[in-house]
Length: 429
Ligand SMILES: Cc1cc2nc3c(=O)[nH]c(=O)nc-3n(C[C@H](O)[C@H](O)[C@H](O)COP(=O)(O)OP(=O)(O)OC[C@H]3O[C@@H](n4cnc5c(N)ncnc54)[C@H](O)[C@@H]3O)c2cc1C
Image (cartoon, rainbow, N blue to C red; front, side, top):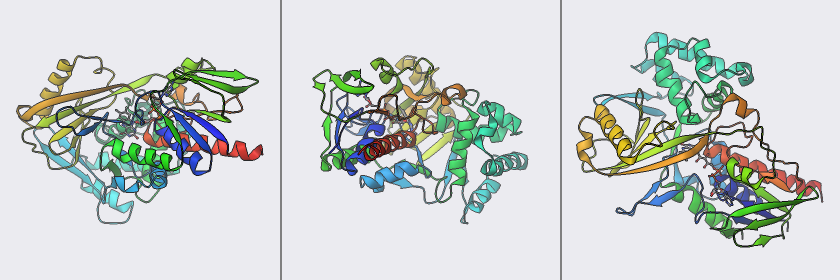
């Protein structure tokens, strides 16, 4: 049995370990923190003892890699695909507008929903539909080096379709403003959402915490497959000899007995090992803020709401509490807790009058390096799984998956790295 050392227990490492162990490789995971999950983790809230996530994660029906992974680890029931696509738009003074697919076959159900959507005029809808149809037939590469904003302007999108449709998807999926995000990547994402068929455009929310949805079932699967999981063990150095990794030093020991090493760590951790030339790749990050508000009375009845023209982007309704998500939050993340609370309370009152009076407790979770910024110059330089060292492979949402920094990208990168190792093994034996 060939031995693989996986460094990093985020979703990319867990995905790689799952596919490798499923293919009879002997896998050891080294994770520097005390729990698996990396950027998808949950914490126990002190008073309520409820598990809350480091951030609400939205998945989409086009997350095919994620769905396959959940199936492999027997956790497909832990997510809930919308029966019928809808998004609730919340406007000031608690005005609710629903963009909802009709009861027809795709894409007519979406077209009908759009036709009925009152916040867009006929002109807005015409410009939006024209571009949606064009995307199906266009090659994403053809948009060249444009940003999303430049591309949408070139495609004559109206102000309303920009704000209510394109910007919501861009900031939600790429976690960065339209004037920085790569149009090429955005176009690819849109193709996947709207033109891969089935339920690809539907929103999926985990039915439970991220921990219970992904991490607990993944860990159980790995343990069943005899994967050794070493938590609170940090890889400090990777030693190379004759173009191969021959030794891994952690804060606890030295590993020498392995055939392959898979680094499934963020770019900045890989850089610290100093073994891969990363001078060309200057990855920067975009923050996400999640604010949990416990309420005496919760007036919300829908599961989630999109908000435009506000620093708040989404409100998720969890019953006793609500979860406010602010994407692309680099301008807010360094503010103090009280400054952020003040902004949030003013803002929620604008949309849900007097809600701030119902708030009895606030928890703020800052993720400064939530996702890498997908600008055009970075996308071309993303590293592949294969490296110049014959037994070292890479995974992680930042590697070259052609996807943004998402759960889907992380899981895909792990699957790709596992396949590279499996192929390498079979081609050399
Ligand atoms: C707040 C927030 C909201 C998000 N929202 C969404 C969303 O709605 N939809 C979506 O699809 N995606 C979302 N994402 C992105 C998604 O969570 C990530 O893309 C994905 O989890 C990244 O997984 P990864 O394995 O590539 O990296 P990570 O999760 O960073 O995993 C890397 C692991 O390596 C470990 N490690 C690092 N260095 C070492 C070392 N030296 N030795 C050992 N271990 C090490 C780390 O501790 C970590 O566990 C969000 C992310 C955040 C933070």
